[in-house]
Length: 575
Figure 1: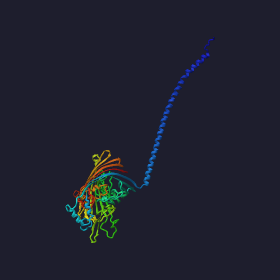
Figure 2: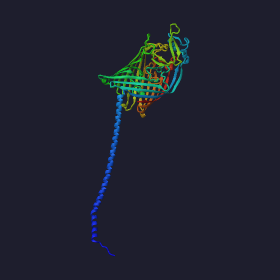
Figure 3: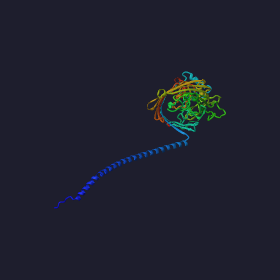
Figure 4: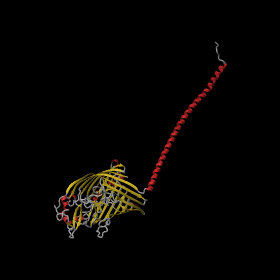
């Protein structure tokens, strides 16, 4: 076998390969490192690109949101411009649903045996009693001890009575000088829309111009107020002239009880009554340097004699003319936390009633049925429940009232949101005639007089209250008022199922809790009111008031209430 050996060629080839490996190896290693760095940079660039992409997406989303917001603002502006261009009147709605529970204590009424005497022929009874002797005869019976039977006493309860009160407020502003305000309203008891009540001796039992939308009278929408305001500056004195159906209900200080802004310009202590008229206001703050100083002249018509009455435009018109009222409201001071307001009112030739609708339990007429030239009084029961249109028969005298209201809020002085108010009021009546309405005439009744007397009368009323902050943003109020024997005001439009508390001849106590549910737009009110009457005829100008503890059965031909408890709960929507 032949042994093979390394040739020179082979050895040269091997040496060449080794040389190439030694020379080329560093370059190969360097290329591998470059690839690794390149990969790292590519990965970094990829991450940077992803971040840029994310930022672009965020910018795009934000841009889209901005575009949507701009579109929304543009739509709202377009709607506002459209509203301004097309809507001339701004509307506000208020709806209150309320539940009352009423308890009447110690009601006194004449016994049926006495009432039947008015339907028994004279001289045994009063049916056909001669008109010339009736007032003296009845007064003589009243003054004779034991001549009249005692009154009957009883209690009455209405466990629950539900009401809805609706208001539609309207405002239109032409410019800074000329504007309009109005209100349509309906006020009804659940399950009743007759609009007429059986008369039990109270003005609140009569549907009349002064209370049509302020007391429950069914589902009819009525005009509560409508007036324009024309403003003009006289030098440094801003003035305001207004004409129409006046904002004359729910005036100060009833805003605390109603949990509202001031509802009217007359003080509610002397006038809370719907009427038509005018006002002229002078702003005196700048010329007097007294905060809020103002002076307002007011005029109103309470009764129109020559429209719709039996004697209107007749050839034998009785001496019953229009009832005109004039007043002054002076804001003595008002710095938004403390105020003093003085209100004076005068009415000429007030009448023995107003035109209105009611159901009288019986009708009294004055006739000469005997043909002897002398009139007699006759009574007829209204057994059919017929509605009567009442009208005044006589001008009975003049009326004056003066009221001062002081209000303050303690936030600035004591850092506590407590409201306090105090009011003192005075009334004066000057009787001129005994009524010629057959029933009143038979009793000899005039302006706060009976038995044919025509005496001037003075009365007074005090009213005070406090409202405290409570948990859950609630407000808790306490109020008290007292009216004297001859106290008389025109507050028949006060919102009450019992009767105006500010007309009471006696005492009224009240407490209430206002609880917001949705801000000022929706709230609940829980309260209780106690009437403690001392004299008869609260809110009525006819006849001399009689102390309830000593009245006789003729004084109680209509039911006379001694005490009333009124508990109430309401929900109010206001927007």
